[in-house]
Amino acid sequence: MNKFKSAVIGIVMSAVFAGTVGSASAADENPAIKARQSLMQLYAFNLGIVGAMAKGKVDYDAKAAEAAAENLAQLVRMNGPMWPQGTSQSDEGLKKKTRALAEIWTTYPKVTENGKQMIAAADSLAAVAGKGLDSLRGGLKDVGDSCKACHKAFRGKKIK
Image 1 (tube, rainbow, N blue to C red):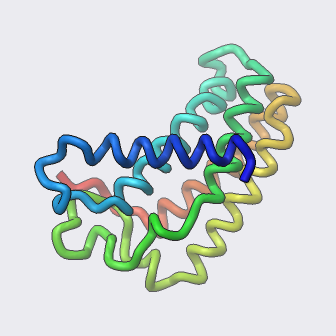
Image 2 (image 1 turned 90 degrees about the horizontal axis):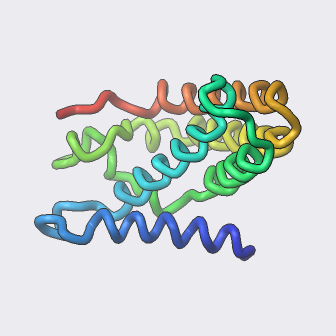
Image 3 (image 1 turned 135 degrees about the vertical axis):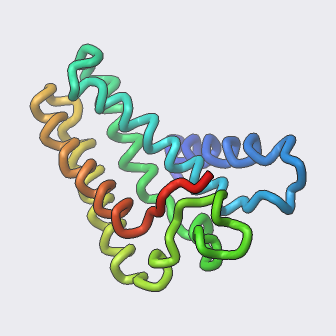
């Protein structure tokens, strides 16, 4: 395992543990849900960096764009234990704790295909992000489309 991947895993795990420390009861929190929410926050953080550049909200910085895109390409490969069946919005007691829809598990081949598309899009973005603003914008479109496709099919509305 390379140093970067180790660091990413450490960050995600730190976020998970930090999120559960001080909660009313450890039984009230599901570590798998917390882990995937932390992962999504890391996606959003890195996409925010390149997205702000693409929108012209901050100046384009090739090194920062490349780093954020490479982070994303590594993050999208994290999988497995964060997605156990029984942790959807429709499962008992989880309505307000997650936006994951049960379709993630009932249409499993489809979610796997979405994951493969996200990996390909993130890899493409990582390959071009440091090569100029137009290249960044072009690569970012496919990542955004991939995110939207998965959210449309597998993410429910936030329930308060």
